[in-house]
Structures are given as structure tokens and as C-alpha cells.
Image 1 (tube, rainbow, N blue to C red):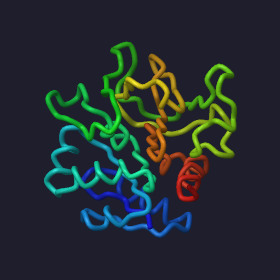
Image 2: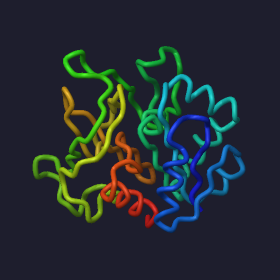
Image 3: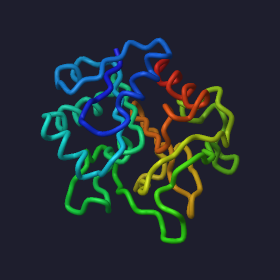
Length: 208
């Protein structure tokens, strides 16, 4: 069973429907018990970092979610804001601590580009030839390198561990658009809005 975590932030139902369209058994839930029993967890989100942390704590999901993500038997996917919440903090919400599963922070894009970053952009899953196709993140199985996905965000994550960056995208600067560490996956783009190529990412997550 896949549990999509309902914490009041945007895009929850579109992610749920996308997973269901691929044949997955999905529950949209704000109950800690469902999170504790889930085989896979998905944390989508559109909105402000601080508001998201507040809502997770209000619904008694914050600590429960943090513990479940640490369980390597449970595959986790964070989408957009759901990716950023994995990290320690964000410049968007000073003084607010994220889940802190991964070390790093979220930064705003430079003034030289239009913010938010909205629209289609390519995702580079090979690192100057050093990463082979077989070594790529499992979410990108059978997906060509430099495929285009749909983005909508004003902040990007800066990871202190460069080894977990599975793909990058350029918008004013190169930023981490996919992270992967053990059972933890995060994408800055919206697979549920990225047509067939995005559904393939979700299908790969389902099959993990």
C-alpha cells in the first residue's frame, strides 16, 4: 500500500490520482497509524516551507513521518516541497526546522532569473560520463537522459552530501532536481504534471 500524506498542502489529489491510474493501491491519509503501516510513502506539496512544517506538526505527523523515513524497508518519495522538507531548513522560513533526514537547506533562485521557475526543463541524470545508465537512480529506469519534466518552485535544495544528488537541472544555476539515498527519493519537478514521462517515474517508484 502507498500512503500519500495529507497535510493540507496543494497537489495531493492529483498525485493520488496519478498513482491510482497506474494501478497502485493508494490511500490519501492524515493519520499516523496509516503512515506506520505503509509500505511506501509519498509526500507531495506546493506552498511555503514553514506552513508545511506547521501542518505536519498540527496533525501529529512530523515525528511519525521522520521515524518511518528512517526505516529502510519503507520507500519514500518527496515531490517538490516534499523534497525540500527532507532537509534541515529553508531560507524561505527562517528559524523553522525541517525533518532533517538529509543535511542541507533550500535557497532562493538568483535575481537574474524569473521566479518562480515554472514550466518544462530537462533533467540531467548522467554526470559528465562518470555515472553510467545502470548506476542512475531507479526512478529513471527506461527514461532517457535529459528528459523534460514540469517544474513549479522558487527554492531549490543545497545538499551538504553531494553523493545523494542523482540528477541536476539548470535554471540560472545548476541545482539538484533529484536526490536519492537508500530508500529515500526526492524530485523537485512534478511527475504528476509531466505527462507520460512523469508517469513513468511514478511507475518506477511503484515497482521498487
